[in-house]
Image 1: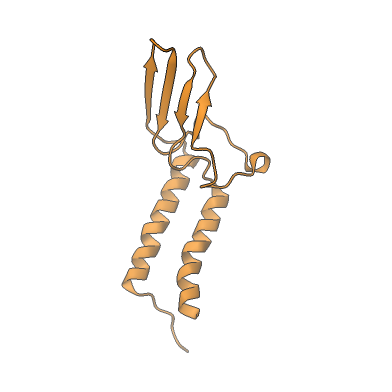
Image 2: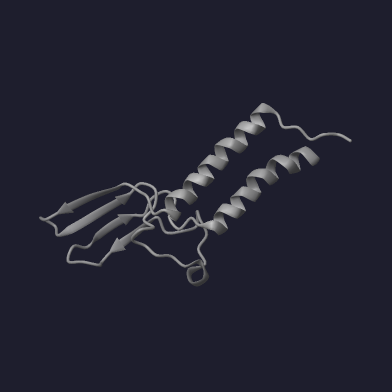
Length: 117
């Protein structure tokens, strides 16, 4: 029986992309993200920039919105206070277990389909 082995490049591919996948899930699950806030009193606007995710402030439900990362809104308008401005929601907004499962399947599927083919 032929044992399926992975080349070094394939192992690195799996490790790098799984680390990115796990990081995206981790920052959303634990609602961790640095945020940069800029207030302009002159124009009465505020601008928020979340680096990874706005999960702490933006509660999301896939069953209602049916959005899948990366097909989500990365920029929104904030009208929740007297200051109105723009919000960058981060590079992994709304990333949850469904995206994690799909991208894990794609990462491993890409390598193993290539091996089988």
